[in-house]
Structures are given as structure tokens and as C-alpha cells.
Amino acid sequence: MAQIRHALNTKRTDDFAAWYQEVISAAGMAEESGVRGCMVIKPWGYGIWERMQRLLDDRIKATGHENCYFPIFIPLSNFEREAEHVEGFAKEMAVVTHHRLIADGKGGLIPDPEAKLEEPLVVRPTSETIIGDAMARWVQSWRDLPLKLNQWANVVRWEMRTRMFLRTSEFLWQEGHTAHADEAEAKEHTLRMLEVYRAFAEEDLSLPVVTGEKPENERFPGAVETWSIEAMMQDGKALQAGTSHYLGTNFARASGIKYQDRDGGESLCHTTSWGVSTRMVGGVIMAHGDDDGLRLPPRIAPQQVVILPMLRDKPEDDALVAYCETLRAALAGMSVLGEPLRVQLDTRPGKAAQKRWDAVRKGVPVIIEVGGRDMDSGIVSLLRRDQLWDEETGKPSFQTPSRDDAAQAIPNILAEMQQGIFDEAFERREANITRGISSFEEVEAFFAASRYPGWVEVQWSKPTGEALEKVVERLKEHKLTIRNVPMDAVPIDGPCIFTGADAVERVLLAKAY
Image (cartoon, rainbow, N blue to C red):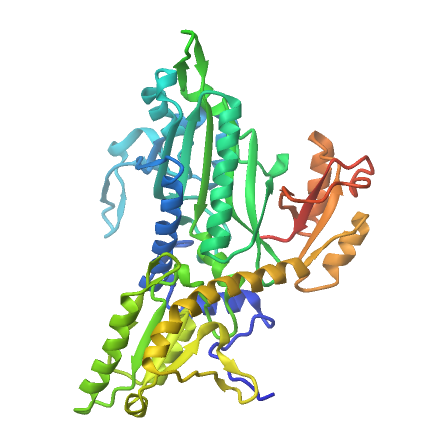
């Protein structure tokens, strides 16, 4: 087996955190902005997010939701109405107190003391309170229910430790909010949206996830139930990729979201909220990337195929571009995975090999190079991003089909790649979930024995109050958290590893982002 010279300087196994940062830089996805914890999302990175938006927005609208937009500034008094909610976000809130600047006489600017706001405004960390105000105005009777809203927006949570896409002070997301007549309907909708997230993650992002309910200590502030999808990254850590919350009547009571029922009485609405964010872009990087850069599932690739003619700044270049344009037009007229195939003909100046490796690092699923000899022979040189190397030779694993055969084969290649990337991640996850551990001492030994240990599934008795606090503190000592209670876990058959009491369910333990 020949030695392979990869496109990145850092290997995943050497330094996963540094590798992650290099992937983002090498793929031209994002860069630091100059504001702590905030990033500039560059066109390729934003193109991936746009694809995610498009696919998820279609799924959300298919469940009857309408998009809307609410202000980024929220009066502080809105949060004060829901004490548990504001306590959960208080340490992360950015607050606006003045509306004008004046010169300080030293060449700088300061807030004008005369322009202090009557009430501070919180820069949106989430929108339950301000949307609750609107729901209180919009819902009058049972005929107005259910009310189903969705918002694509930015939010600000002033994080202490940041990492691009995964945890930033400002990030992009969607947040859905609904109001229902009763508990049963609201709970059903909470789980329906959880299933939307699962399908989106697995079918569009090729990201296998575990769906389940969060324990009491991990609930969204003010929620009655919180459910999540959890994904395993290649370093064995968990990523909470999306959450769906049943809020009961807590926010309805605080905001006055009431309706007149069919009998003429007045009842509080039951509300839900749910969201995913740009951290899913980080999840795609860490679940699918390799030592050559990003690998994108075709559904979310801004360009699924890039064609690179090997131009030499000579008269014959025109014929070569025309040859490639015929292929581009044929592909652009095809459909793959239910959408028109996205293909780019790259005729920018520059060496084809350099542009090839740029495309590799960006994770373009299929890269096609065409030189003069290829054109004369009626072929193309095709490189699959998921089968990049010939391990025997250590060189890129080019295929050389005819131009027409390549055009016919590419839709199937992309569909196969979408499923193959999922299967690879699924098999890795299943191989790295350890079951059968019966004591916390075994848990300690397990996570101490490996740099990238994966997850552990254990049985527990669902302690609450002080007993739960003791469990959480014990886990914190090892930087572990309870991820969720898997919905598809096998029945319990023994005692809780924390309390020794009869177990009632299984939970996943992991280190997490």
C-alpha cells in the first residue's frame, strides 16, 4: 500500500480540534470577524447553510407552518415575566442600554448619557417571550388554533468559549413556535417536529441521530419536556443537533395566550418551540470530513459536480471549453435526489490541479477534469470525493468514462454517495456505543481508557431533585453529560448504575460539544 499525501496538514487522529479549524479554513467556509465569538460566513459555507435552509424549510412548511419575522430587540420586561426562562439565559444575554453615541473629547465615542433607554433591550437569545406577546394578540378563540409559526433569524448568546459554527456568540437558526388547544395536541406536535429534524438530519445531511427525551437537568429553561436529536462526531463526542420543547402552559400564562373554547369558557394555550442552527454545519464537518478536508452529502452541496477544463491560454482552449459545456448542459438538465442537478463549469484562470484540490477540500462530491487528450479521446477524468485515493498507487482514483457515459452515471453516483456517507457514519456510531456497563466505576474506567471513547448506554432510575444533582456533579467530574433517553432503546433489565434503585429507562452518557 502506497503512502498517501493528504490535502490537509493536520490529521484527525493527531489533533481533532485543530483539524476541524483547518477544514473550515481550507474549504473557504468562514473566518474570524474581529468581534469575539462572531464569524464571517463565506460564500461556500453560506451556500451549505442555504441548502440546509431550503430543505428544512420545505419540511417545516409541509407540516402547516408559515414563516414570519420578529424583532431582534426584546424588552427586558418580557423575560422577567418568566423567571425560570430568564434565569436560564441571563448569563448569556447581550443588552442594549443607549440609542446614541457622542464624542468623548479624546477622539473616541461613548454612549450619550442623555440617550439612555427607558427600558433595556435584550438582543434576541430566543424568541418565546416576544412571540408569546404576538400569540396573545392573535389567538382569541378555538378557531384560531393551532397557530403554527416559524422564523429564520440570527440570535445572540454571549458564549465564553467559542468555536466556529459549533458555538458562537451570534449564530443563525430557525425557531418554530406553536400554540395548541390542549396538552395532547401540543405534545404530539413536539414529537412531530422532532421527527422532522430526524428525517432532515438523516436523509439530507446523511447524519445518523439518536432521538430521545432530555433529562430534567437538561431541559430548555421553562419547558415541561425537551426532546433532542444527538449525533456522534468522529472523535466520539456528542453533538446536540436539534431540540423540540413542550412548554406546557408556562409561557402562555406569562404572556396571556388564552382562547375561548367551544363551550364559551376561557383556557390557556399549550405551546411548543423547536430549533436547529448553524451548528449543524459543524456537525457535518466533524461527522463526514476526512484528512483531505470537507466531504459533503450531495443534497447539501452548493455544487454537486465541478468541471475543470485544463486550459493553457491557447486557441484550442475554446474547443475544450465547448466540449465541457456540452457535458455541463447535459448534467444541468438532469435530476438527482428529487432536484435539478447542480453543476459548475470552472473556467477561471489557474492550474487545473490546484483547482482540483480546492474542490476536494471544499467537499465537492464529483470533480471532473478534462484535458486536450481527454477531448480527443471523447472521455473525461472523473474523481469521486468519497473514493478519492487509489490505495495501491497513492494517487487520486480517477475514472475515465466517455463524456456521455459520465453524464448518464453521475446522478446514480450522487445518490449512491448520499446513502454511502450515511451508512459510513451510522456504522461508526454503532461501533462506538458501548452497552452492558453495570456500574459507574466501569463508566469512569471506560472514558479514562481512550482519547476518543464514544458513548455509553446505561440504565438509570430517573432520579430528581437532590439525587439528580448528585448524579450531574459526579458526571461533571469526568466532563460527561446525559445526552438523552433513546426512544428505541431495548427494555431495562437491571438496577440504576447511579443509585442502585430499579432502573426505569436507559440513557446515553458522553462527552459533548
